Length: 449
Image (cartoon, rainbow, N blue to C red):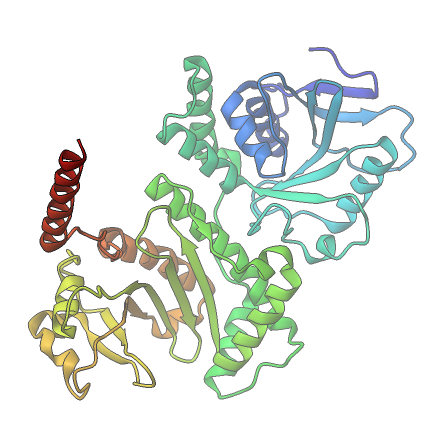
């Protein structure tokens, strides 16, 4: 593979880069970029997230340590890589900036790369780090999101890349055996501590301050900088959680966002800040493929509790609420009931009711008390994990959250089935009537004949 004419300097991304042992960042970037160009399904899946389709006739090339000819923009550090996707006469090019370990993407540096991209006619800049983004176009660095530059910047976390690797292998989606071997080696490399890849593991110091304020009965200010920092961290953690559950279920688990939040991150922040100020809550909904319902997660600062649950429509073909409760209970296989609750929704203005799961198992009829024959319409089954002081701690909050969410799904969520209205059946009397009508038609035909 020859270096493109527009590059003054640049190496084809190597699977085995010859770099100094201290160049952890360069080594990791080179290996991943090489795998993007060498493993068909991996490259296609990764680039699909930034809106690019890699067809059978496409040519995908990756380079490291690049310098463009006749550069006008002066930069101290060079871009870490370049991705070139050629399809017929069309060519799409992206600069790559990567950080590993605790290093974070710098807004000033990215702006310089945007200038290079503009003067060289490149399409975008892609950043890679251990920071997390809900979607590649929603950059984790606020200054980059708010820039007036027209050059788009996308973001991949290293954990996202590892998750794509994991799912492709677990679902056996790599056709070529040699490429599958390469992808296995990439997974092995990324999971080793030497690669500098890690998940989100702690909330910022502002998390403790915000909890202290709420516990004392204080009001979070509308333009609280602490709340803004906490929300940014929460968004990184929610993305990490979806990746954790993706790897554990071997399916693509995604955050379920309303359309207005998908297209407008600023509106999402505004709405979530309002929820945090008024209710003292951080919320997340995860969409697990083929699950009975989305997984709903609420971190409540006032109660210092994490609630994880799913909401199911009650079976309408059961007449009594007791029968509907029994339908739910039969689906729950776990013996760990001490933290499990069921919240029930009733018709009209009737208030919701809530019971411990163990109470309902012992006596399903308790749900019908004082309901005067009303039928329950929905169940919200959830685990309430009370953390106490751990809730306010930067590391322990994340540790508990990442333990209890998979725990709920494993013990309860994955066993639940949604109720569906049965298909209509032909009634015996209608069938008999059709037989009589058919026989009469035959008699008429015989008479005519």
